[in-house]
Length: 252
Image 1 (tube, rainbow, N blue to C red):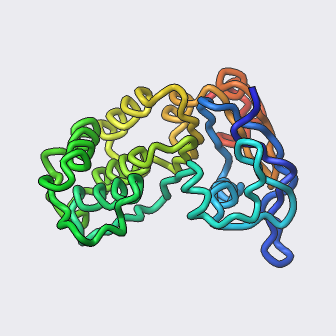
Image 2: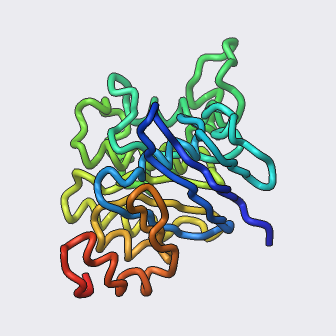
């Protein structure tokens, strides 16, 4: 089967500062890939290159066989490459429901329809889809609460839900459990395990218990390059990885 994503020798420089160098690997549909590395390894920069928030200095990115190297982020999102951010990127003065309805309107191509008031009378299927998502993600009871009044963990839940609501082919999660309590983390991890098997997930996460629990394949970024690309089991036991993270070659 042809890879859904092909990353071909991409590099990124800002002036004379090289952040990433000669990154190459393929991603198959449905893979769960974890991306780890010390602070400053270029993990978020790499996500920015995949989503079109940055353009590679060198190299090529293909999605389903088509080069998207120079495409802007909104075109890649339409293709099905969607991300969440380290810091929440929500419309905080709107309710959870309104944030979600805006995403669903865009997905179904009714975001420029002006001749009908948006309510459950005219758009019953839209509201039903929103209700199902809110219920699944444990946010239904708070659907009319403004995002700015939610806890940080609840805001993270909301942003991940909005990413899922777009029906992406590839979902990039940048530290999905950052700032969450242990119970919130466990809840999100459980939901991520239940996502459709055909959905490709790429996850940046500093919580090693979370990332090793979610990812089947791990990429370790270090010194601008891919240090290791292997199964989670192999990477967990690798002495180089343990030395980078805890200063010891013992297994983490």
